[in-house]
Length: 505
Image (cartoon, rainbow, N blue to C red; front, side, top):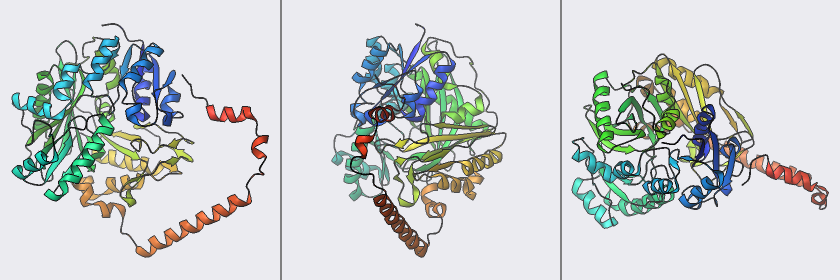
């Protein structure tokens, strides 16, 4: 395979910046793509070159294979790293890259066909003898079909997007009368996130653990696993806190799950970084859930305990390289990651886009902040509201928790609302500290994590907010510039402020 020299990162935010950092360390040129909503985004500023690929809606920009490949051609990029989400698990995009002579940093289209769509992956795993969560192996054509199957296996059930992950296009359904609304919203969300509105059903397992295994394979037939990640701290089926090693796995379980994960990857001729996800029930039986044919959001915790740069491995394998290690690597110490969102936990996690007035990120030993924002940046309301991933490493789990709590105390974001206080409450919760939590933990402990609400205090806070807004409006009215002030402003200075230093295609 040809040597890679310039990498276009077909993504945005923190993952785009993270991939570019490794590229720069490997002396590879980097190319960013951005939508019109992301003109001042960090990833567009960080790259060596940046190209606008369309309007704000992702279907017209980050999900447009045609626009991304046009940017690759214009920039001379010879490889495309998809990050996660968007086109990262789109086999048609991989084939388009192959046709254009651009290296796709990820698995081949055939493996993505076999595992990228969740229903097909389930069918393939059943054929390979891998235990799977009870459910369908094909998407439904209508809500009526889904209803009939749900009644057959019994509620509650999970309606899930066939073409993606990350909690998008996923709904728990407890009653038949809730199915139609869940069907519409899940399909709409899946289409917006992945360009594929196919959905399927699985039986909902009560209080399971969500444990995933990181696998890695090369083009020479080698495949290994890099241990597990515990991902059970979830809200709305989206991970919020991840850690490794898992508090519930024994060395024997780790070996057994790792063996099954490698078997699953080899069964479809997998290449590159992938994650095999499992649900573990109360009896410690594990079931195949799905395979994510891409780099995961939570990959930093694996990098902490193995000492491996997974993106560097991806680029190495994409150029035909052999895996540097051919045996499983024993985890060293403990790592925890939290996802910092621009959202308000007290208002049902409503997104909180807006202007970041001040940003102070934590620092110190064995701490990493993968961020896609900066002070002065305006978080758009168009995309996922995650603004950074904070991860730590320590010799023991207890020390890792203490380090994360200290780091979160240092994290300051002003101008928008974040979930930082909520994350601290999770880390301090007795169930989390004992490692005794499952996928229902956050929903059960929600009010406790928010803190007891005082109605009087809430009313006072609302009154204070109204008075403050009124005062600011009065002050602004007193200091309005004269009508001709705009004419006195230098056109050169206006232009300079608009450009802000980012590169334009």
